[in-house]
Length: 131
Image (cartoon, rainbow, N blue to C red; front, side, top):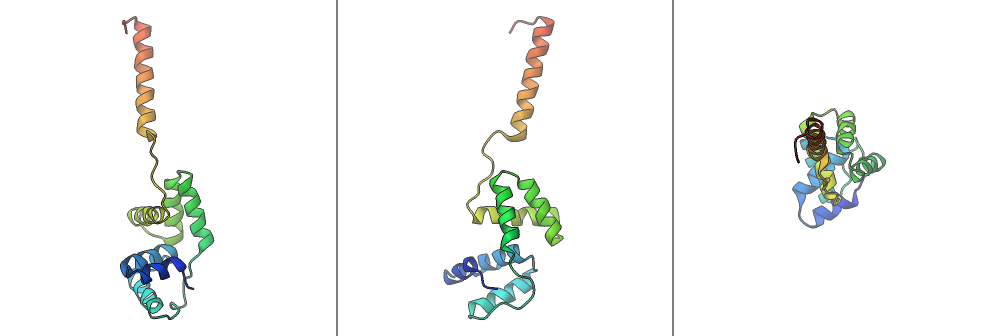
């Protein structure tokens, strides 16, 4: 199965990025991805086997767009039976490839700090410490 994004990377001479993208989209190993991309570079179809599942990739992208990176990583791990680091790197590369940036808000740490501050202020008021 041909992929327009991979074809574009090959036309731009970005073979390594094309191999990475092929791996992300198919879940194959490095050697198999290299073989498939090299076949595509010469105008051939990649070897039969795993195909690029655009519906599954769209689901990952949707999760990332909603800020659910952890869910996307879990889904990737389930599908490809890879470790946490590999799944995280693949999901982050997919996000970067689609222009999806990380959450820019305070995140969990900000929520924890606000909670601690509120608790300290409440405690200070309860014991009568001037603020």
